[in-house]
Length: 457
Image (spheres, rainbow, N blue to C red):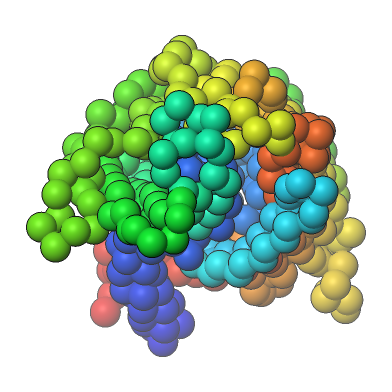
């Protein structure tokens, strides 16, 4: 009984520590540091538990009784009877931004650290499983400045001196998903999940004017916008095991996410910095907060040593909102039209376990993972598409011999805007992530049956 009590205390302690951290993240900018989060919903986090993210993010078809798959609710039906799975992870990021402005190279760097996911999976009846997950969906965090020189020929700004603009924002949107998976026929499962999104995003801009002659003064204009999100969406999924035997398993899977306008509650205030805080004309705009309709399809091939998986992801951002806004300063002095754009992303990864049954050499029982991800960014700037890619590595360390519980470590390097950023004056963003995940499994592997009534006390 001591092992069971220790495990329960660990689960309770982790839950109590991570849930408040997830709630606190709603009003913090520590999850992202990117000028691209100025528009829309911000930086989209890579979904999935750490083993999936270490394989490039692929896993919609992954079906493993001892592992969590939060990407596809149909996979919940694979959970064994009399078992319990819990997964949680922490992630740190280093952002490095660079931009060429008037021939000079501008650089900035920032570090963030927060929790990434918390998920629980348990069986309801035979071939029917229930899963619950909590993870950040998107993050906003930026501070940028722009200085407009005095131009006497400008019909509007010719009567005003130089202007210093400052834009900053922070916040997050979190996803809570509750789903069920049912194996309706042998080797074929369907799943349905309800997704609840909530959070808050705050944006502020300041326009500080200077006198032309230096003898006068102007009041600065301050704009503050707060977006409060609270919406339900849904997801459906399916999985099919085309091949399943002792030597190999080949599975196919797909999901569809219902997107649409998040319709946040927006509170806005624009005023001047005079003693009376006089109301002023709004000089700032923003893209609407929307979620895309998303279709994901992929395969997963497993042998005792090798696992290979790949996903294709289509997101219909433009169909959810076709509006544009004019913002940003181009390299030639003009303004960018920022708009949503549909995206296509490919994810692929591989896992290798030399010999999970090796008694003598521990390192041969570990799982070694690698993956890649390539696709488009979901916004265009001046009609230009930004490409982005990521390379991932990871290792899964088993907690006990022949057990499913593990400690996972993952690394990721990514690059955004490498194709056009320097040419048109945008920011080229590179980042490095390091993550730690914990997968805890209670079941036949360790004699921990949580939901069985004992015959003897």
